Image (cartoon, rainbow, N blue to C red; front, side, top):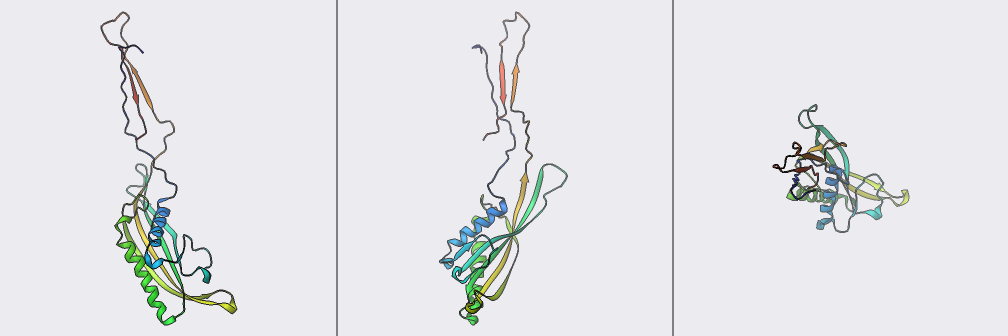
Length: 211
């Protein structure tokens, strides 16, 4: 390129496609369980992210925070623009304790219910957090369940707090993937033969997708 040539590089305003290792719903579940782990009332508990197996007495006291489901509804007009859903995710909780004192156990289950709900609903770091994008809480529920686990001749009575929290995650966007994205534009001035008065200019417009 001659010394009289010049270059111009600009960055196009192209929407970025954000990728995550887990869905937003699972990030919420993981964010909640990481907060409960460090709460002092849960010291010594066995934690789990699934409620798919039978809990034996040697795992108690036990706390599980697990994914129950997700409701996706259109965010705006469903037939206009890129796909965007409004997400409501259901997170389940299970706290299981060995029931050594039936008269006292209901109070203990109520204590752990308040630890979970007061601790999470008052935690401002859950709102708009990159790893747990909770924007609001829609609904909740709880129940107390009593039973026994173990072998029939050595059954252990237990008490369980089952709770659910529905979290509003706001808009979940699915930007389109454009495989034939325009990346570079080359513009060159062309002058009549023998024209020595005008500068020969090369311009390169680099539509960079980087930050």
